[in-house]
Image (cartoon, rainbow, N blue to C red):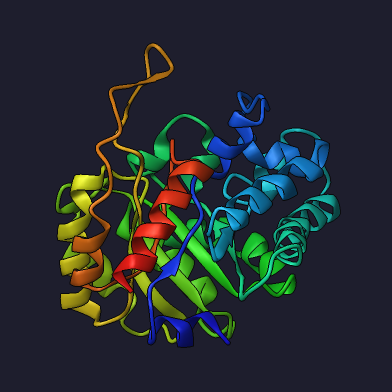
Length: 296
């Protein structure tokens, strides 16, 4: 069954933060490639993290390609052919992990924002000073490499800016590969400050988009985004917020306690893909999976 069809029938459980699972397993992700570095150095660790989420009840694995790009790998001396291989391997590793568990599982190839490759927090600000054409030229080769690996869909995620969303969608349009578009937000606006109604309207003429929503945001920002997404698009909504802890950039550490998820409220509003992002690990996804099963 294709994921788009499953969303018409029930709520689907996403995984949690891949970096969180890798860090819990003892891996250092402090360099600029973040989890994408392990595609090159420790691919078995990436597979193990996906498997941990599947065994916790996740039905969709988001690949380790969020911070992977031709430009980013080139800065580390990695050739274009090798970069294409690494991008394909991100899908293959998740697919391999899915083969170790029973039941339907899907693989979403992560297409992170341009700001991620800068490794300076720009993905939470947007407004990079690049044109839509320049952004499309950045995204095109990796989207093509990921599509060649035949994922179940593309996860265009943590997008802070409508301009970047439009640029990526221009690349995806006509590919025939289903996709979701997920913004990073603060309150009722994208991180770049655009109203969510404007942001979600960007998908109106892109047939490949099967869901829209938000991720890497505070849990309390989700309900309003779900309502806006349904109001503007009528599509199933994807949500995977952070745990509720706060990142202290100066101390380079997380603080505060997790606020907990209001999954029932989100599902009632139209969320059909529900998971977690930063600071949500396999244990949190196991709890969420049980809660969503009870709601069903």
